[in-house]
Structures are given as structure tokens and as C-alpha cells.
Length: 275
Ligand SMILES: NC(=O)c1ccc[n+]([C@@H]2O[C@H](COP(=O)([O-])OP(=O)(O)OC[C@H]3O[C@@H](n4cnc5c(N)ncnc54)[C@H](OP(=O)(O)O)[C@@H]3O)[C@@H](O)[C@H]2O)c1
Image 1 (tube, helix red, strand yellow):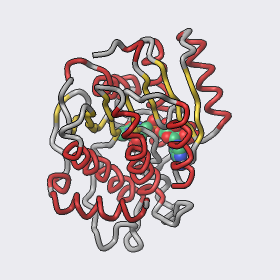
Image 2: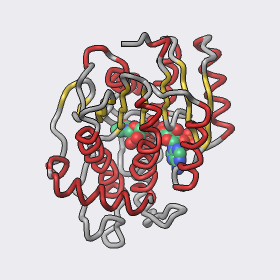
Image 3: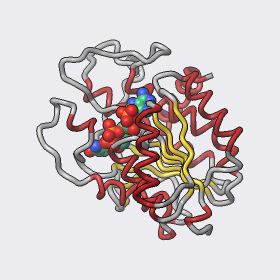
């Protein structure tokens, strides 16, 4: 297994909250980081903060608004042009449930926004980066999901009926779990492992602080970052793939994640939406 100093780790949503804390921790341990954000200003500020705090200047920054699949395609093309390999991909960027007063929002491609940003963008990005992950020799993908999971109604995936921000968020997070299980099967014969997790509960990040659905916070951002870091780089889970964790512990996800027909439906839909 490569030392951390020799690993290239790509983190989506590295400009704030969990992604930024994770970036700080991994930079402090000497890893080479590829940071993704959607705001160039926040991206620069995060990179400066990480460099100043850790002395690690092995940082590259990229921008892409994940509410646009074209932007995700451009981002992955840029990574493929610039990076010889990716050892760890951490699919972390996301938007929370939002305000209970906000009605259904759409992505630039006309898809339900949370499904598009939290799941579909990462589905596309991951598939586009598989060749780079394949060059690592022992790569890992970590999908940051959540304990908030709600079954997907395949007759109403994009929530034209019965929209609710929590439902939209929870469906997008279950989609990340289903994607993880499905992809792990595809990658069984490869040297790429993929796992997913609920990092920690109600950490005080923007997505939790900016919603009226939650009235409190529970865990620290550090606790969540520790769990993601564990799946991303710990030797203890070498060879583990296709699993769901809560923090550092193996756990059981929503029943729909274990339904292979539902996963097949999600995969077919995702392929159609991203082709
Ligand atoms: N907070 C919790 O308690 C909790 C619990 C379970 C799971 N999670 C998961 O943890 C992950 C990180 O969330 P967080 O709590 O750290 O929230 P956060 O502080 O709001 O950070 C979200 C990150 O995603 C980026 N992002 C949002 N919309 C984007 C878009 N359209 N395109 C590209 N990037 C976008 C944000 O960019 P900006 O900086 O520009 O806003 C930010 O970097 C999410 O996947 C979330 O579902 C969080």
C-alpha cells in the first residue's frame, strides 16, 4: 500500500464544512490533494487556509457547479488531462434539505436539484474518473451518503409530486448508497474499492445551520471527517468494498439498497440521464 505522501486524493465540495475539514486533515498528513469547489473565491480561500495551516502546498483547485452535467463533464476532462492518476476519490459535495418553504428546485439540466447535485453529478464524475483510479493500483472511492435515506419511488424519482426538501435529500443519499453497492459489484475484479457512509449526525455545517428542518446540532465536523478519512486511507479496511458504514462502524442501510432490481432501475435511469 502506498504511503499517504504518495497518494493523490480528490475531494468534491472541499470549500466548506466536512470537505474542508477533511482536506485540512489529509493535507496535514502529507497527501497530495485535488480540491473541488463551485466558487473560485471560496476555493482560493480554502486552499490558502490549508496551505497556511499545514505547510502542504501539494494542492490543485478546480471549479464545477454540480447542478450542471456539462460542468461535471468539463471538470472530469480537466482532471483527466492534468492528473496521471487518482488514488482516492471522495464524493462529498452536496446540498441539504433547504428551507421547508422552498418548493422543488431544478438543476441546469431540468432534474430535481438534490438528486442532480448530490447523486447524479457524482455518478457521472466517478464513471469518468474510473480510468484514472484504475491506474492507482489500489484505489478507493468514498461516497458520502447519510443516515437520512428514503426509498425512491421509480414512478416519481424527480419528485414532480409530493416534493419535500427532506425527502429529496434522503432519496439522493439513498441513491449514493445504491450506487456504491452496484459499482462495487462492477469493480469486483479490479483494484478499486468503493464504500459509503453516514459520516456523523447533524454536524454544524452550512447545510444543517441553513435549514429550518433541524433545530439542533449533534456531532462535531471533526468526528465526521475522521470517519471519512478512515474509509479513504486507513489500512484497516484494505480489501473492503461495497459496504455502508455509520461513522467507522459497518451498518445496515435502507432496505431498498439491497434490492438488486431497484438498483438496476436506478442505474438504467442514471445512464439515460447522463449519456
Ligand atoms: N452536516 C451533516 O450533519 C451531515 C450528515 C450526514 C451527511 N452529510 C453529508 O456530508 C457532505 C458534506 O456536507 P457538509 O455538511 O459539509 O455541508 P456544507 O458545509 O454545506 O458543504 C457542502 C459542500 O458542497 C458544495 N456544494 C454545494 N452545492 C454544490 C454544487 N451545486 N456544485 C458543487 N459543489 C456544491 C459546497 O460548496 P460551497 O462552499 O460553495 O457552498 C460545499 O463545499 C454532504 O454530502 C452531506 O450530505 C452531512
